[in-house]
Image (cartoon, rainbow, N blue to C red; front, side, top):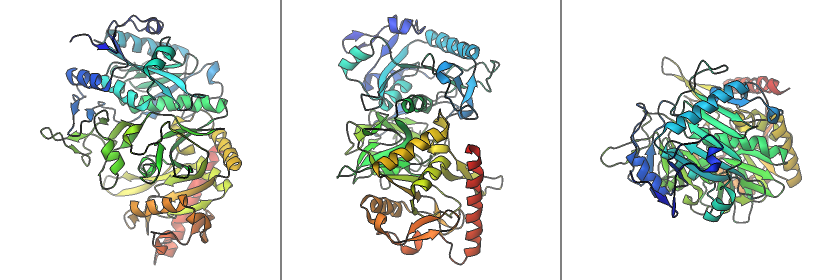
Length: 531
């Protein structure tokens, strides 16, 4: 293939900023356009037998496949023990790695990258506020990874690339995911390893091609850096009303964080990762990463229309002739994803910054069916539910019956926390008090009974609840107190039936109360981790 000319400059290796990193590959393509990454991606054969070739779908999005790993592998994440990691919350989330094992993985990744036919370098910022943003460089051997990070990082101007990135970046990600880690290396548990060195400001990926590892690696870095500067990093989406009022929406996967943030009546700031500084809220990312399973234009028109030229569809199934994607086909994975730039969402706010939040909404998908569709929280309850980070998922049994399983993820993003959850919880309480922010708990899960008996809260009614929070209706509504959790439950909400707001199961009050008390004990047991 003829060597590309990009922005009038031939893109070759041997650049001093890359040589210092041990990258000696002579064919390095830097900051390619979307069209160039498409062309290369379609021409390059898959080197992994478990990876399908890329293709263009009927809407112009690029499909890509991550091989055997179709999701993050948190048990394979490591942080190197060093002076820069002195405040790390060590344990199941942040597993320590010694310097020797880091060096082995670092050299292994660089050696593999140097043997590839060509490499891709993608430069971008993390953080829309220039006061706090960091420069990130991604070195990869798959064009789809470069396109993915081109979407997810904030894209510099040509002038910024020349002035800010010519000498390198603040943090560098080496994505050698096609090549396995050596499972016999000390501290390794498999042939997958995602290692972060806060001292050298580098991240190494081995044994997984799942693109989300890069995105969440940057988020982990921001979780370490921002609290040092008095800035709260948050796993939340954000949007802004016509009057400038900002809302933050927290929630684990499947609770509706991305779906509910894409509100046609409000301007999107971001769908997943934000920071709250003394000046207000700013998005960390330049794009969105939405789940695609069951996607329809009727339910989520903004996301549907964003899947076009420049977007990346990961691990989806499509018709080989028409190239129409079947979003209901989960034969590869239920974790199908779409990556697209922020500006693909109509009415997005650019730059992606806003004022101090007026409302904070904790989203939970309660499959036990005991939490109300909406509750107004006191400041103390807000910190409690923030530290708890509760949702309930389904777990399949051999008989095919699915039972709810409680999941607690501190700060609604425990897998990405670097410091102890109390650090982020205390910062949230302080900022809420300073700016008069109101917190709400919204259940997007089951009502009128648990999974298998009740039904999922309709998206239309959940949107009506969110609207009533934003327009101030629920702040003034009368409420009843839910026992065990002492939640204040509004008795009226425009667009929602009154009997739907109160969660007690009709004709099965005793069963409901028993389930409510069981869930309360689960919360208590979880909080023992932090006391």
